[in-house]
Image (cartoon, rainbow, N blue to C red; front, side, top):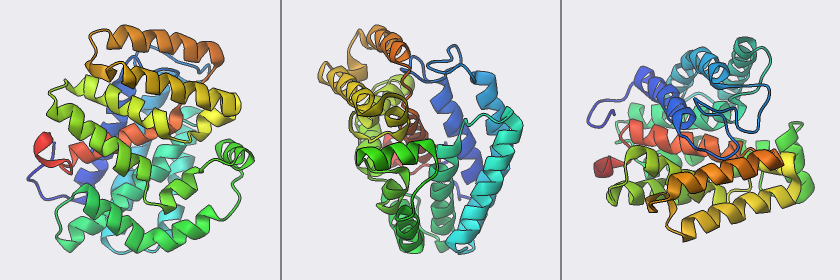
Length: 282
């Protein structure tokens, strides 16, 4: 963890890659790739994700530096497109981290700007900087129709897209994921159980376009209802949390559901913990 240390572009970027590994290593994680399972995927496994992470590390450092130097949104966007090309080259054309390139990239840029201003990295300072610096550009981006499968599904079903989530300053991350992580750690949950609790809190509320693309509105509601039931029964603090999550993994795989948006947001919360933004609960 980087609490108490001055943040640099290098440390911000390194924390992003470590956070992606935190997300990958969490298991069980219904429908998603872990170190021991392909989840609801035939075209990728943990090795695919690790190759992608290695390819993306320079990008997260680069975009943190761009943020520190006050780069306009088109510069961030171009860096993201170059990173996506490197990801696809490393994975043989498999999309492992497109959502994380967008979400974590923006957060790294905001953290770079926060560090350059001499402010402490907190969820509030990172979110406000993101909105103040690039909010208008993100709102304009959100108004453009997406050609990606998740964006098409979101528009068809009347759901909030990833671009709209970004334009609002990622409310699922800051209003749901961060408080869930702080609560879990304050209650003394081990780190892996805390990540599991955060994951289910996110899945319970997020209009996850990956779920909508794969399972339609019924698939999305099935996943949200399953997450809410998991939390209502005690979440990751319940003695049977792991077996219950394993049973849900089987149910998600039977329906070919993959909550990739929730995974990306879990990684964002893990990243904030790694850069010291969650303070004393770490």
